[in-house]
Amino acid sequence: MSLDAVIIGGGHNGLVCAYYLAAAGRKVRVLERRSVVGGAAVTEEFHPGFRNSVASYTVSLLNPKIIKDMQLHDFGLEIRERRVNNFWPHPSDDFLAFPVGNEALETEIARFSEHDARALDRYFRDIEMVADLVRSQLLETPPNAGGGLRDLWQAIKLGNRFRKLSLEDERTVMDIFTKSVREFLDLYFENEFVKGAFAFDGVVGNYADSETPGTAYVLMHHAFGEVNGKEGVWGHAVGGMGAITQAMAKSAKAKGAEISTDAAVARVLTENGRAVGVELEDGEKIFAKKIISNLNPSLLFDRMVPEEDMPEDFSRRIKRYKNGSGTFRMNVALDKLPEFKCLSQERATDDHLTGGIIIAPTMDYMDRALRGAKDYGWSREPIVEMLIPSTLDDSLAPEGKHVASLFCQQFKPDHDWVRDRMNAAATIIDTVEKYAPGFRKSIVGMQILSPLDLEEKFGLVGGDIMHGHLSLDQMFSARPMLGHGNYRTPIEGLYMCGSGTHPGGGVTGAPGHNAAHEILKD
Image 1 (cartoon, rainbow, N blue to C red):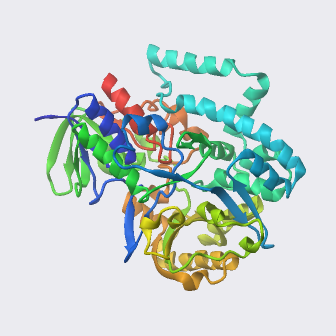
Image 2 (cartoon, rainbow, N blue to C red):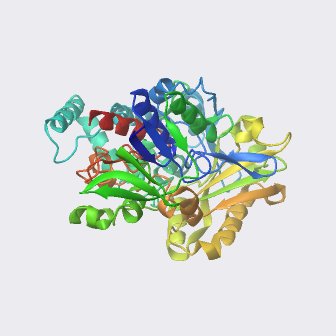
Image 3 (cartoon, one colour):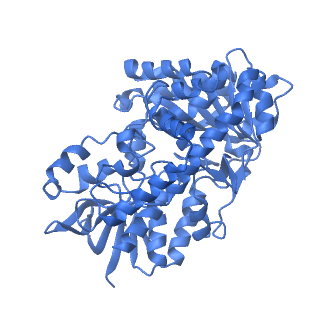
């Protein structure tokens, strides 16, 4: 039977797209290069008896409508909430924690600044106001530049949402979309540790320092999620992130989607300027009415689409699409829990080890990390976020043992990682050791993924976890390029459904959802 759609790449957005197309009665086939679907949201055994989320590592941004539509909980998904969201060890052996609940957080921040504790309500009110605007657009296609009446109507609807804001709220929206995270936080807080804690979300997955314009938006991008109906909460998928994509695959298959693994696509086939199929690396050709790419736009257009099939201006600009998030990922198998010096205090509990443990106490620390990366390839004091998911999920490690994710920032994307990946990994372990003596001795196995490894294993170009910078010129209607923000490419019959389209990176499922609805319109 002829196919209505072929989807290149079985990452989470490809699976979401496949579900909605199949649910609408279309014949869909997903082609995944690796032997397992899930893209960067997969769980693997990386040391005998120890499993962990390999790349993507935590849950919050996954859209609740998609969870409900795909009935992911019925297909085995269970999400457990962190009991403390994050904490930041300090060199003085003190720490700043972000406990769950505004009252507890206010009490914690008051230890560092009464002024900043009083400013929390205004800060969260402003962040949530802008996050609500973004949420209202997550599952809608942006108005496309150069589009017709439908896009004009979308622009009018968006404009009406903004016209309902007060002048001060309009200023706040402008602040978040244009300012650096340092400038934005200076409007609310005075203490460097408090500002450093909030600023982390502005540089995570973002090869930038705290003074880079647009980093305030990256901070807000991480704030629009929810877990189990609770906004601003982060959680863990039992069984790791692969549990999400395995549930998605089951859901899509239940609607009739076909999923093929070990099916690497070599190129997109075109006839008379229209995409008509794909050719696999083994030479097999598969034809369909619609070809849909879940890949980073750079991978699609640099490697799979003949340049002569692209308009000259599009080709020139897509070659300069910006990638590279400076991310270095490690998974470690531990024979015991880390013992952080700062958690010897009376106010510390076991709950702190269920949250993100972030070694980056101030914005100055983060900025030095970026300078070190640009000068030497990586900083001798990198930004490290550790998660220990086995504190919430004992299925990941043998009894009494643990696994930890090390999600590390500011590692130069185009550095010689073949030569230096082990040296960089040693620096990361040394950094954790300073705050948790004995950590190195507790490691019984590890998996190391430099930016180069992330690209080769998962197709994350330059190790970019977002499939492209979240900068003003690559957001909303301009993601991946102005004029093609509606999931369509300049090649008829070829579409995009990955994180290189609106609303961007993270395990949201929104690009796959939106692309499917545009494809069904066509």
